[in-house]
Length: 381
Image 1 (cartoon, rainbow, N blue to C red):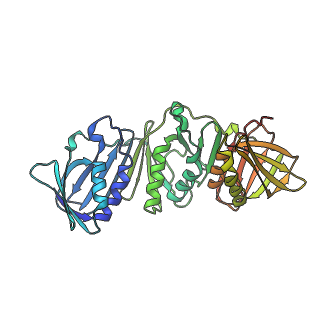
Image 2 (image 1 turned 135 degrees about the horizontal axis):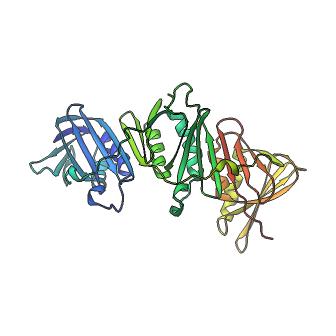
Image 3 (image 1 turned 180 degrees about the vertical axis):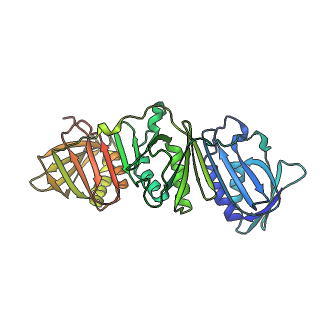
């Protein structure tokens, strides 16, 4: 095998696939990246796989003689990232697993492993196919991913539930304390091709979707990407890139029934003012229990934020708001409010309440169609 490519190209694509390489692989070859030099296409294809999540990406190169082998992902990435800009030559000797990496600065040799032990990425041949607009996909991921659970004992909650109905595409994520629901495009709108059966429900691991979002943003991808899925596996394909992930098993909670239909209190507030006050007051809240109290004052049309961390200190801020309904004192985990406001990217947000112990809803005014439900924390006297 012998190929010549740009250092910047190899480095960029290695950084993409290396993120899915396991730190403690169940088999030594999984610590490697699979490199395929394709002479017919004049392309280099790189693959990383941890048996659950796989990423494959390719780029153009001058292929003098083709070949396939696996190389240690971390070592290869560390070397290539430090090489100067310009062309790099990768070449195997008579000993197929020893690769020479030559640049203007010098020459390195890295020992790899044969490709025969590297597992193939799963494919979906007989499942369903959808074509989703990238903008809608990114909007849904941004609005939902942050609400997934990190508790591996609740496997189904570590993912995002994506469902397509005839009237649109919906993303939902919950960790049991909060819920984010984002509704995006109509699957049959311009830029999207209808799927064979317009109704589908899949729960995709959050880790896989974070990598998908990163890859789409990194390459400023536009248009639509193909999504193929069967009961156990899902594959995203676009341009010269592919991401494959297992699907999470188990029934996803019926989250729609958690959202109250009516509210007795409501406030409208400037998102930046609200977010800024929360981030300042969180400095004290984080010292103890991360709880912030919100007080709705309808007489002064103010939202008062306060925190009292015993033995540490206290804080209080008031911001102007449009408030309707009776006054209310209610408390929340400050992190949940801060993260929710970051996802609601509009100038004003609306917050709706019933009682100090029932769920509250945050929604953006204008912009994306998103509902963010947060459970309050009981205030101790």
